[in-house]
Image (cartoon, rainbow, N blue to C red; front, side):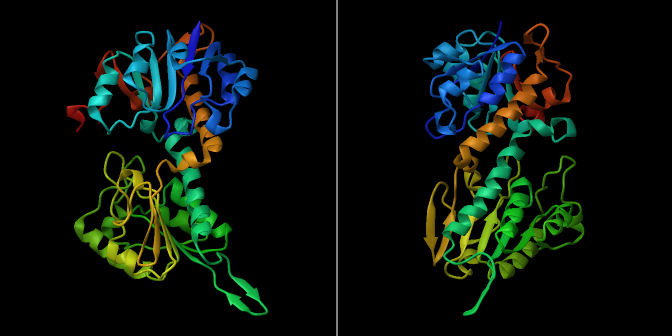
Length: 379
């Protein structure tokens, strides 16, 4: 019998790796789903909701893990958790593979097969498995809603008998999934929206959502995107020109949302302290890159601070603030991925090691870290 284990996350993580909807679909694949009691509480999924869809609710993580074939998590599990699985069991989670290398090696040493959802290839077939996109989409929405709440003025233009209230000016820095959702949300709330990114393909995307694109569009800009669709690190000369343009533009903005991240690297610094302090009193900066050091020089990860009359919000695990939605989407991402790893007829794990999705996400196998970006030859 194929067994999938789901254990509670740590105190800082409100999301959970399975929803009642996906429990039902796992059982249809012939799997037994063991869920630690209370694992879904912070995502508003009760034990009874899981049980109604066929899950087996167990009293502890040990009971869920003992002899399981697959462990699914939101965050990286502990080595102690993984040691309780069957030899060669699959562990699927956001492993934060570039952080805490000794911890990752210890996890690999348990001889479990580790998959990191952050490494999901950006290919059409894997779109339903793209965890970064599903979670970033929620973060982009939440950033603008929270910024509007913190902003001490109205967002849309209002024409009244007593005069006109001007619309808020909203600047989105980084036009990935989070940035695009932030643009769309800010437009729906009535803001005047501008956005910037170093990838030329994003200009048309910004304009399609009703925003105005702001960037130094020189020859380097035209080559500033990898084949996988990520931003390339830019030269110092370009960064200087772009910073000058942004510095002038940001002075007139009421709300700035920064979303720029480069996989495996610290967040690029987009807003200097001087630039932030040039904004009008009462302005808001929401830094979605706070977990990786922040796009703004003044950001303090996990804190909301005020500096020179400007509020700077550096949220951690932002999608977790919408835990119900975030868990529901993440659980579907995992289901889509796991469906490719299970033989429904035999009710057993059946990994196709030649599958591009498997090769892209496989971090460790047989006690060794194998992902090219994490091995010496891949650095």
